[in-house]
Length: 89
Length: 206
Image (cartoon, rainbow over all chains, first blue to last red):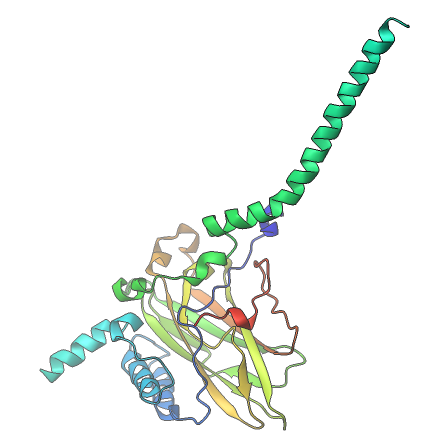
């Protein structure tokens, strides 16, 4: 708060919402990671196009206990989830 | 002067009493301000104390804003005493506000001893930092790397769609995300500008 009295701009640093990812020491999810990186490089580093690969990476993490299992819509993948659901049915 | 003396004495004494009373009150107020201010901050949520409780519901309801594409450029640093090799896997990512994005950093411990690191990050430009929300990353918690071990560290974040409505950011299309790793030793205080107290690893959000 002393920054307000000196009229300086403070850089706000916020902790992450879900905390920290456990480290993938064994490299269990290396392959989905490489797929995602390859997708990024092939598509001009566009996250929009590569979101299915990101979803796969998180799926791998959840399977190996490196991430708490969450609903996809809480991770911002609601539209991909709905698309998969439509394709299945 | 014999007549006025008692009156003068009385006046002098009252003035002295009032003045010392004011001085003591001011000193007391100075001491009392510390706990009162803490309570005020907790209630108001200023100074970064209340920002741990993000509403995760924002992620579920937000929609990507297709009109503005934003480039996030990644930077990695280590403190000079920190011997890890730490770098981003990708130089930049193009994304839309309101879209969750994944990015990777790699850290390698080239030494023969396990090293525990702890990281912090910065977002520039300053005005964009309030819209930059991290869902999950590897910062503010101790991370241990065994000798010669290399790990990928993901960062999962999104830019709040309200970013497009901020007039100060109408010309901003590039955001810089910079992580710095320090070696976690006892008594390490992470330099965090804007915080009153250093963020210690025991405070990490679960």
